Length: 389
Image (cartoon, rainbow, N blue to C red):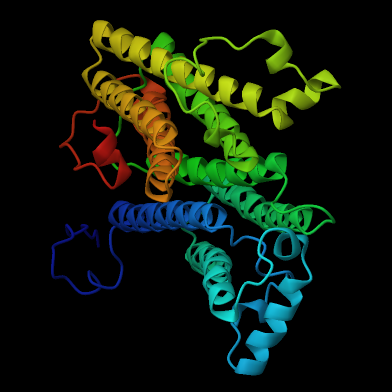
């Protein structure tokens, strides 16, 4: 006897137990994307707290690296006294903070402890959901490899952080080494860019790639922003922002004399330790980022790519605002609030540039066919909404 297949109807037995595969995959993709954006927000928060730790001189208040037991702060008067005695043995205390009381030390300690605790939280928020999504088979292919790479980069970031702190505990040192600080900040920025890149690639609606010229410009922007963040780390580490507090000139000249820019021997050390060259390079890189962002926005506009043009215009506006904030920070001689805003806003520029670069490459089936999607539009998620369509 010949049997005929009955069409599946909603409400039929088993319908609630075995959802359609495309719907399940879409839910898993949205879950992973939300997780990645949450991690990105935590990284931005950690960069902000790290900036406050540096600006308040708190980074050397904890003299040991205890990844597990260090999660507990001092709980008794004896514990606080023991931690304070360790700090009193550091060059920073003997040279800068001689006579500091326990209450002032606690202020320094809480900033650094909060920064390290936030780092531990980021690690937990990364690894626990990672294993959950892995068990649920929501991670595969390039996404899995990318997440593994970010996990390794996060471990490296922790090691760089301790190496940075250890550099400030050496005899005669009162702060961490500028190069190590710049590497620490840049590694955190790389992790942030990686998280946002992976999350933007999980966008539900298919998106055709932009023309090759637009893709090249879009990918150049986050690279330039990362270079600028590294140079900003050198400025912060060497306190170069406390000199030449004029703009657009540098104390009356637009280009300092060669003997001021390259006063240190060997020549290469000027790029890290010469505050005049360090600040000059940071200014030049800022001009370059703004120029490239504006030209790219104009190019995207002329190309007729409405989505790319909107995102590029947003990045250009952010770059201009960040440059203005940097100038204000310099003219005001680096107050805490301005310096923190400048640092966090740099993360915003990086995030938007990364989202734009990823979406310009195309997402979903349209990325391989080159055809625009025909289905209903999806509401942009998180940072993608801020970056525009």
